[in-house]
Image 1: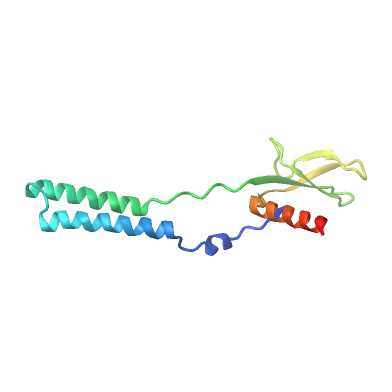
Image 2: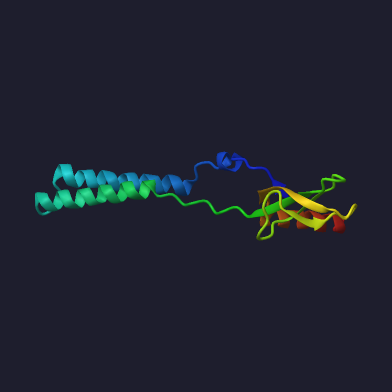
Length: 144
């Protein structure tokens, strides 16, 4: 199935307990670093500053670190059109395709077809949970 490009999936994601706990711990790490600097916790002032600065830098770096979302599965398609009879055909992209290239014979009039468009679409893949729910519903229907 083909799905149009949209960012609704990103908007549906909320704050999870795990991400909230991670952020709280990282902020706590930065606060501990600041305490090392301002309160002078440590054997001497230079080591306190060094430890505090390193903790603050490490915490700030980890807060900014984010997982990159997985690449969506995409399929590249080529649209062919016959100029004589107007027949339109969609096929998978093949290496060497470019717009206005004349290839493939038309099924109706045996004339060469032109490549009109080449585009890529994101494929919609059903989740495993949905498949399991559908199979459970089917088994319940069969039993009743």
